[in-house]
Length: 106
Image (tube, rainbow, N blue to C red; front, top):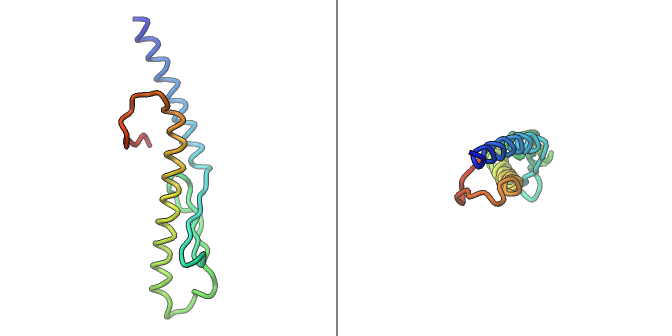
């Protein structure tokens, strides 16, 4: 019975740490870029798009399709960085726990 109480306390502690980590992931921002930095997007570490910055030289009607592609590429770049930041944060919380590799907790 004592082991069960200890496991319950650990689970509650882990739950609080996970909630704290989720809040911190909202505050962490990553930036992705494409087109040699001509298009930049900023995301939270949870993947929420925060801002888009476009170099004025790209704002030509005939360049619209290129700009659209660059926005997608910049978002993809930032999303990858956001996932890496979130994974790094979660590894610290789950250290020592028998969680299968690749299992996402958020």
